[in-house]
Length: 225
Picture 1 (cartoon, one colour):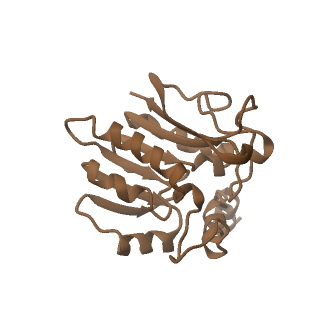
Picture 2: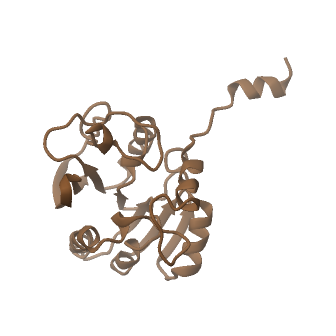
């Protein structure tokens, strides 16, 4: 057997997430506005954005020495742009190359850096605190597990997830893409099976109930190390 054939059998199949997320922006699947990239209502509606910014700003400014923050899944950066000034360094990451190019040209700061990474596959930047805002809800359990396995190098994880109202079965698997588990009356809970993420402490930073029984958006602070 030739080396080429041997390599083709052992080569891992890449996650389909990059293509799926590129399509989200190319086809305006989360809506559109005057900018070429739009991360949807969850990144723009004041009822959703403002409580999140207030809670995370309060946390970040509680430290005498500012933290290095890694924003994993920064999207169009409408939310992250407000938090940069409260950090020692802000590393904003997304999987879509054109989006990162756009953000790099639009948002400039001495302590701001953009990186194009697949956070389920690539090594993560080094920092003190991770922001994962409505990211895992779009990903399969396999990708979510891969990401969670890399978060033990951070002291803090601030996780925001869109959850059903009332009782639900957590972590029902989905195919990565624009949709979330809400359609299956499920949502991400990283402390539950199959993830069983180990932490030292957790606290709810904000909880927003959406209109018309569209669920709740919960932001939780986890102290990891």
